[in-house]
Length: 234
Image (cartoon, rainbow, N blue to C red; front, top):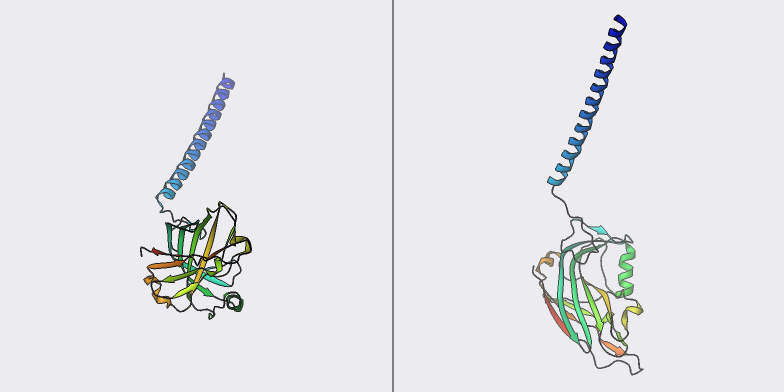
């Protein structure tokens, strides 16, 4: 009898011990679940900071800080960005202005200064801020023959009356347009004589579109481009 009683007591203790372990395990799991849920709620409540992709043509947010270019020769900070929907048609070409960006740019190496002088004959000073304006344009040849555009002869004038020629970063294949083809091109203009303090006063741009010529050996046609004005909602 005593032996049976002892067996029952031991069995009861084991059951209680197992039950307690199960309860403790369950409570521990519930606590972990609550902690995870709490963290998820905190994340939801935190204001999400938008990460800006500086190459995203749809983004209209300005840059917060200066960023170096890929070669590390210059740094820049976009202070104005706008998605555009301005269309101009001229001599069988269609120009769709998609994006404008106004940027503070600082050449930080001698190489940057030398390259701009060599390529575009622009005299800049190292570590000084300058105004750069970039335009992204869809260019479409709706003619039935091949044309070349003189992209490097594209000019931009601001309402502050300074005129700049686009930087000559174009490849030869960027100039050549087969019949009924379209390309997206980026035009960059530096304004060395406009005070950086006046950057917020730039409210209107006048673009002279590039000249075209054919490939029949006749040389340049009588096409000197045409102008279009773009107003900025500053």
